[in-house]
Length: 204
Image 1 (cartoon, rainbow, N blue to C red):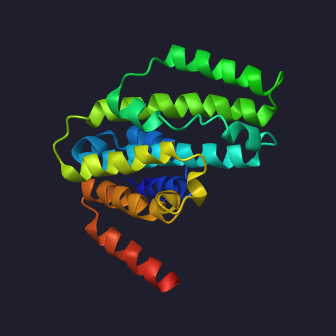
Image 2 (spheres, one colour):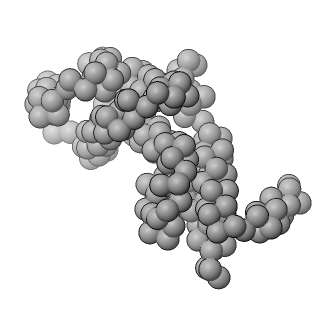
């Protein structure tokens, strides 16, 4: 119990840094019941991780020296439907990407290889996310999924005015606060929550 404040701060900091995977890992390790008892928080974290993966990929792609030629291939155009409909075979997609890569360059730069790996991981994660929540009847869940998956349709989502707000780092704050509050509620530390919020206000 004495380590609770430090762990909470570390989990919150991880989310604010965009490392939602780390936050999920530590939450499950230290507070395994929190996400089970707060499904909406779990869903928000899962969606945010997907968004952060897309953001990381967009940043890698924008810094790639082959950025201009890669964008002309339209890799992202059909991903929204692929994830929603669950009808893409990852092996076929990898084969198709290999053909594109051979057409673009004989030897891909290191950051392009990293981007391709992240691309595959993001697609797989998105399909898992869709499969897990596709039958959820809540409108807010389906809307959040639609918004998140729509990012895949943009070659440069960070600068696309229609969806750029979804990738804004400010979106991490609400998710971090929801998880933080859920952890504290789990241990009945309402007074600690009050003090933490008061300290946050005084700090600003």
